[in-house]
Length: 310
Image 1 (cartoon, rainbow, N blue to C red):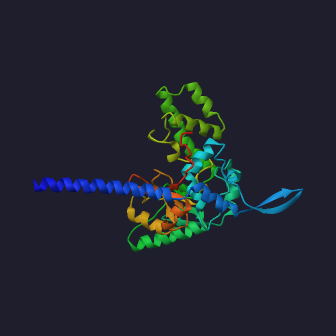
Image 2 (image 1 turned 30 degrees about the vertical axis):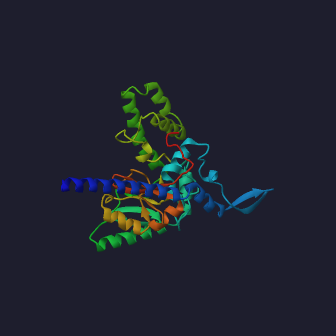
Image 3 (image 1 turned 135 degrees about the horizontal axis):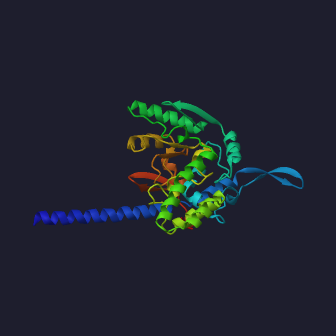
């Protein structure tokens, strides 16, 4: 009887502990500021050059819509929700667009940013200078603990071109079309029509299909944007992302976080984003922690409820 009472008491404590954890989590979420508001405050201090009465003048303040048209464009809205953490990165060239339209726009941005190239375990990668410096510091710290931090997937583990993002998109988009045509969810005629659309319209259509449960990730179980970015939207284009071979090692994730590198794309396990911040600073920047596969991801806290299936 005594043993039975102890078990009941233990279960009660466990239940109360879960309830308290849930309340704490809800409280933490409520206390995290709105990511969109935080970003707009940052943009209010930016300077830009405008033409007025035929003369170029400097003015202060940039509207979020100039960076990412989340109120009018479905694709931009999803990109902002899934990849937007990059906008609070410190000491780097600010991402002036959430979606690049072509290779020229990508090159213009990359040429404007101070970049550094290193060869790590035989793989040559390029990142923004601050991101690379902190990565090298993390590697030195890891080496002291007999650990390694190395790129995953070759040189595109870091900087990518617009063409790289288009190719990676097609590597999920084409098999997804074949899969759902085979399942008779999408007709062959519709598949070919969407295949020929301009890429932004193509992405929007895929997101519409995914709202019906027809997912385009590798295993068709989740959104394509948790597997690859829309063309022109990858954090790798900003030279602030790195796919890490040792992503599954908690000690490696801890070391990277100590040097400003965090996982910010939910369920993309190898992908780390350089924010240049301490983890304790992230909630004040409008980022909230979510867990997937036993790993922590810092994603934008959007109180305006941006619908992922819209």
